[in-house]
Image (spheres, rainbow, N blue to C red):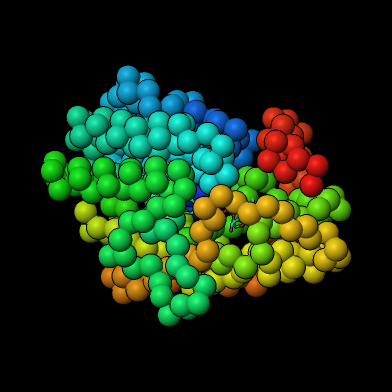
Length: 341
Ligand code: NAD
Ligand code: TYD
């Protein structure tokens, strides 16, 4: 069956991987990407998609209600999947305002237009960070869908605010939405400000690898394609009004990831530099994916050992992509955040 899916934030890391995943899996679907191309959005990421007649790109801000209404009226989507967001915790500490605008107001704008036009299905891509963090000395604890929202950073608070609005729309207006809360993703097209690509790129250039605090903070890493697979299942088979946690039980301390990357690239551990800790730094994230596994049959396909290998190979063979990014405005960001480190 043919379907038209609007993917917001499709020029970013996970959104672009989702665009490729869907174009590949559903040759009869039309995918329309809405993205205003912030620093994190790159049209070069969508180069191959733009050659596909089933793909269309619209440069548009999700807060622009008129623009969104006009496009959605014309496209008549069957499903809207909202990836568009400000996504970096460190940036949210430097300047929280845009996080509230994009992540909360943008989500509300999309939902209002969907409601007005009776779009049959909306999916909100959220994060495990809305649950706050878990202590390091309680490995028996995991985030489930009923764990209370307890966000720590302006980023996670803005994502939590959006989630609460989505759930309120479901209950109050019978808005046909679902939410996924995924753990940390890694893979191709990951913006170099985030841990894994930053460490790969710095190691390749023999630059210091800035590890925050003691490096013992734990994240639960999932290969991006497995996240895309989960969203595909939710938008087709998920139950309206429900939240689904997504994660592959792959907890790792930051320092171990950094050491692994150095080993794979045959670089010395002397490149590791411990720097001042992030303010309010969440200690540990860990997802319990029982619900999505038992209800929708989701299981991750890629083991971390294979995923990190594929990811490093991708950065080695796509230097053009990231060299262009780190040569521009990113330089200013890097000097501001890391100084001379
Ligand atoms: P990203 O920063 O790489 O991409 C975000 C995209 O949204 C960019 O293309 C940007 O141009 C676009 N965008 C930003 N503001 C916009 C606006 N106002 N209008 C239109 N487009 C806008 O982010 P990502 O890592 O791909 O994350 C995508 C989504 O997944 C986010 O909602 C994030 O909260 C969530 N998430 C991310 C992770 C992760 O590990 N990266 C994990 C779980 C959930
Ligand atoms: P990040 O990729 O920013 O994702 P998130 O904060 O959303 O989990 O960071 C992952 C972990 O790596 C987090 O504990 C912070 C840490 N980190 C560093 O130690 N150094 C860095 O330069 C960056 C960007 C992150």
